[in-house]
Length: 256
Image (cartoon, rainbow, N blue to C red; front, side):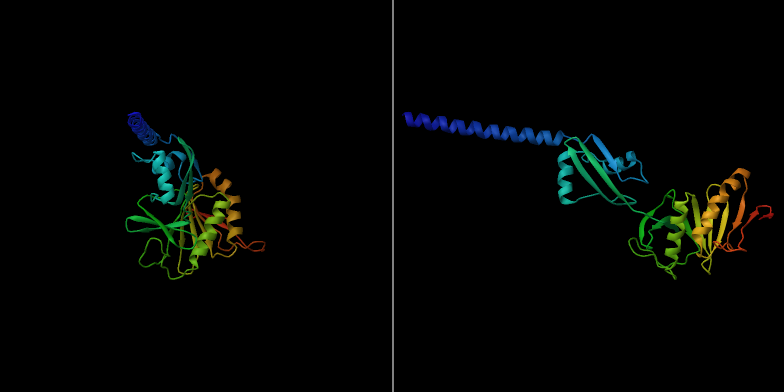
């Protein structure tokens, strides 16, 4: 009789332990479902603001759920975001994380039907968008075939990409805003600036760094006088006597 009572007590204790375990599990699941990331520290963003980057990654109902973020990190499940090559969510606590952005770095774009096709320094088409991205010049005068996202832009002369990269890097170095870069059939380079609104004729890629350096020195005077027109730097040679530059105003008056 005593043994039977002991068995009953043992079974009851096992049931109690079982329900305690179930209850703890349910509490943990409920806590995990309810726990959300509230503080996001964005790192590596340049073209996007921190608020824009955060809203793109965490824009759905469950995107801020801590447990789901952890699972998606393990599965490497991520969203496809415009002009973002990759991103990582690094949890710092159940309610905070670092959002590390690895942005694509387009050097130019071409107008293709109703879209802008953005490409990197190697000519790889990295993104297609209906919107014009600030700070990325439109490239004109380039003949190309059928464009495929993720593949190299099919042009007749692949050397044009190194010229584009060289010009954009030098313009960025001297902090000169550029709206458009155009090429003629002889690969002569013409650049349209945003501020001031002038056109600069560089000629070939030869001495392009020196030409852009001279442009940088001339811009304050052009801006101060409110000039608009075309600056001719085709014949400028670095350190060579006899090289020249001229500025043609919109009324066709030449200024040396």
